[in-house]
Image (cartoon, rainbow, N blue to C red):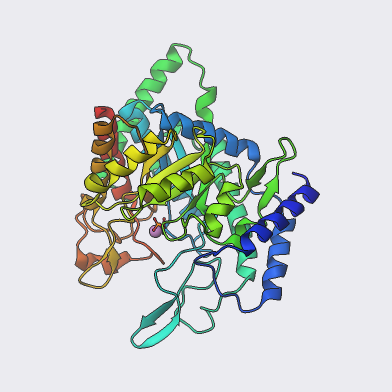
Amino acid sequence: MTPQDSALFQAELEEAGATLVAAQQPEWPDASSVRSAVETLASFPPLVFAGECDVLRTRLAAAARGEAFVLQGGDCAETFADATADNIRDRIKTVLQMAAVLTYGASVPVVKIGRIAGQYAKPRSSGAETREGVTMPAYRGDMVNDFAFDEVARVPDPQRLVRAYHTAASTLNLVRAFTTGGFADLRHVHDWNKGFVTNAANSRYERLAHDIDKAMKFMAACGADFDTMRTTEFFASHEALLLDYERPMTRIDSRTGLAYDTSAHFVWVGERTRDLDGAHIDFVSRIRNPIGIKVSSKAEPDDLLKIIDKVDPDREPGRLTLITRMGCGTVRDALPRIVEAVTASGAQVTWVCDPMHGNTFESTSGYKTRNFDDVVEEVRGFFDVHQDLGTVPGGIHVELTGNDVTECLGGAEKILDADLGSRYETVCDPRLNHQQSLELAFLVAEMLGRD
Ligand code: PEP
Ligand code: CO
């Protein structure tokens, strides 16, 4: 990365963005402290490398062709306080376990992408939150303000942008250590299950791990080379929401002269910011990372085609991932016309199903929740639609944690509305817990194997 070129490019980004509407940005209390935080970020080393983003693009292209399957998962909103070794390890273990279930169950390579090491900013449907008659600015993620419902805590603080970088750096460091330091060796599939409370999904995993173990021993006895199995690729992703974070992290790769947002390998534009003429679509159209766009049932195919023309004018496989989040009752009706229009445009997008964000509702007891069965049903609808149209269901995008939280209803342990309060820990959307995540992986492996 060349500092001068990067500085020039960052200035160009700001200039281009200045005339565009950037939705969902915080109201920082004063301009000079934001400027100083942005300059500090621009002086920091990149978190990921251009070459790694390029590798991910080729993996996503494989998923678009049906030669791999994407598993993208992690918190809805990461917090600084929860960036502990145990939490990070358990989330990675959960994703590795799900990937093992999918790989073994459907004999397909799994592209592992965490919603991790940067998922600290949240779009909100309202700029304010009212509790018992008291109104405060909404919580916009740890990168902006604090979750505590308190006048001081809710004031946006630009120093949080800098703290987000440091937390992302230490998280990513651990992710890299776990996934390349021997822990992710496929001969340790059993170990990934250790430390989790025994339950039905766990026991099923244990049996699968036993089968994988046997297969590995058989291959070892045949003299197979295990070098590729010692480490695993694990990519980082988050929503590119706060431009005051993403722009200074964007650097020019000295090898190619191209711009990469080095805050993550993969960044996506959310449902609320994918405005064709807005600053977010403009930003992602100028960077070389593989890009995701969330697509709800409200998306107009024509608008989507214009977004594709802007972000993926060359129709490059792996460049664009469309993450559809329709809702389980809507996916079968709404998805086909979108898939048909995109296919007709010649774009070779990777289709990924987010079965979470179209299925959120408030339970009778007042918790924001999702039904495990609705999540499964949306994935099933996604697979059915793609099968009908002869297109490729390329992956899933889920909000999950390695902890035994009670945030989503149902699953084998049948979490009820009355149970939600016992371990409801998310600061934003409800996540699948460890057991529900494994269960989902087993079900998706069956759907994938069926194709
Ligand atoms: C999210 O992924 O957490 C999110 C806010 O999703 P969407 O933009 O699809 O609503
Ligand atoms: Co969410």
